[in-house]
Structure formats: structure tokens, C-alpha cells
Image (cartoon, rainbow, N blue to C red; front, top):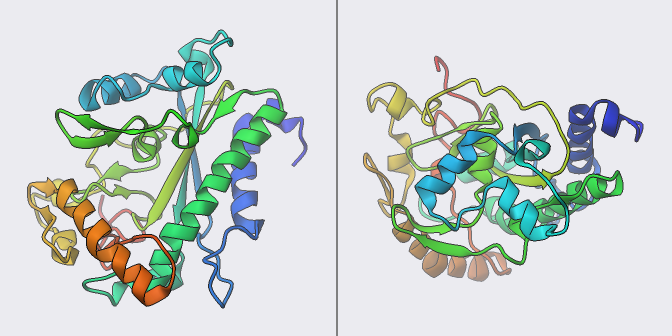
Length: 290
């Protein structure tokens, strides 16, 4: 794709930048003996910097939660900008079929492929964040990946407990890429077995339409009066119930059990779980009928 399309058709150009890097970069790797890719073909979406949802996120999570304007101004304090001049670029990195097949078999601990996608796949996701921001800056559009900002941190939300200054899933929700499930996972057109990322840039791109109004629209449990709940059965420690997701119990299991399992069984450091993201109706798609 020609460089000048960054201005003539910025949505298509950015979509190409993301897809090309995911599909062709050797860094998209599980770093296993087979040399398998960590992620399948991505989805890309856009939301406006002045989308009212970002203020709603802030109001719900806490005053520490950034709007696109706040993280942009923190990064570029000398650059005059208004929210309507900003775009949030979001993407979904779906798990590969081989990783999902492996992980479906597990009941208590992570599969090796899934652990590798969580550790080495997220390292690639960071490279993708840097790559997208770099390409935008190179073309004259200041950009920042909030998750890589040295100012990014975890905080305590009065309503939700531990929360961060920027949420990749919420940015993806704003960009029309998916809605939340009972387990807090984002259910996208390619399912909730995925990871996501984002970049905030001073560029104007038409927002991706949101084909939903309810933040639980893609979850069978909420859409059909509790008819699903398969993710409840998939959690090995009961951290998912009809009341939702217990983040404290989940994180404790990740750090105290899964981290040791990954180290002792697979020989690298890190943690992973994601058992609630596979062998469920929303694993690889929006459930039929929704």
C-alpha cells in the first residue's frame, strides 16, 4: 500500500499496517520448536477521541482512568489538541486453531501453546503497539500506545477493585469490536479467545459502527436469561459465578498456581489461564442467534 494512502484513506492504511505486521512479522511467534504463529489474522476498529464512552469509563472505573485526550496530553504536553482530533485504533489478535484445540483439553491448568501465546504472544503485541505508533509518527501523526506508557499503572477502583489507567478491552468495545461476557472476556466476531491492543493518535478516522447498545449483547448468559454459563464450569477455582468474575481469586490463582505450572512444566517464566475462553459457545465467534 502506498504511503500517501495514510492521508487519502487512513482507515485502510492503518488496517493494512496492523494486518501486514501480524501476518508477516517473524516476531508473531510462539517461540516453540515448530515455529508456529502466536496469532491468527487480526480485526481492526476505530473509535473517536471524543466518544462519550471514554468519559463513561472514567466515571465508572475512577478518576485515574485515562480518556484518549488525557493520555495523549500526558505524552505530548506541548501539542495542542482537542478530543475530536484524536482516534483510538484498536485490534483483536485471535488465538490460532491449534492453540484452541490444545487448550480445550485442559481442565485445571494452561496448555503450553496457550501459555506461550500469553507470554511470547503478548511480547509480540507490544511490538505491534510500537510498530503502529512508529508508522503513524513517521507519517506525521503523533501517536502513543497507552499500555506501553511509563505512566501506565494499576490502581484501586472503589467499584471494581484493581483496575488500570487504560483498558484495551474497553477501547475495543468502543471501537465496535465486541461486548463483554459473564467472565469479563470480550466476545468479538472471532470469539473471546484473543488478546487486544490499541494506539491513540492525532489522526481523524471514521469510527467503526458499534452494532450493539448493551455491553453484554454478545453473551448468551445475559441475552437468554442465564441459559449458558459454560464459562462458570470451565473455571477451575470457581472464580466465575452467576454474579460475575472474581478478579481477586482469579489473579491469585494465576500468580500462585499457574506461574509455577508454566515454569515447572514448560521451562519459561510467566503465567496464563484463559480456560474460560475455550470450549464455550463464544470461543471463536459471536454465538449463533445473537
